[in-house]
Length: 165
Image (cartoon, one colour):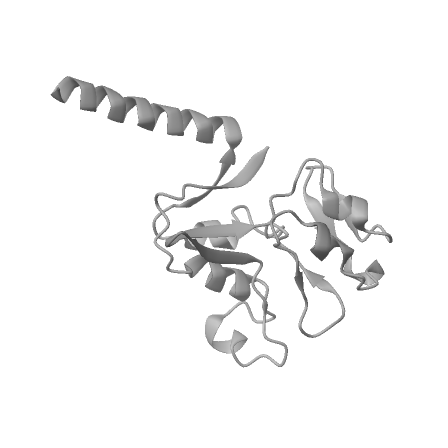
């Protein structure tokens, strides 16, 4: 199962992921047309500065998702791929999911009494935010593969440092 994973050491805070997200969720799917749409597209990823270091944050599609447990209508649910999905048609706009999200990443739709959250760009092979990241701080891969790459990088740097001493 692939996840959107973040290598915070690579993020430079350019917000390309935010722009790509807005464009992907626009009607036109085009930057120049999207900025003139009646309902401006809303991003589902946020680059926040944590202790002066940029960190991209989006829905983590939690295994034990508190937003799903708090949703009284079932508008938030897990699909067959374990992705936290949202059915806007049955959402009543109570915003309980917003209140319980541990990452504060579910937001209010500014045009309706509904929510906006990451949907992992279901019509794409690679989510728009990942594809747009110029430094590859965002990747879309299996957690085991990501962890292996991080361990390998760490051990390589460790061995190089020890060989220099």
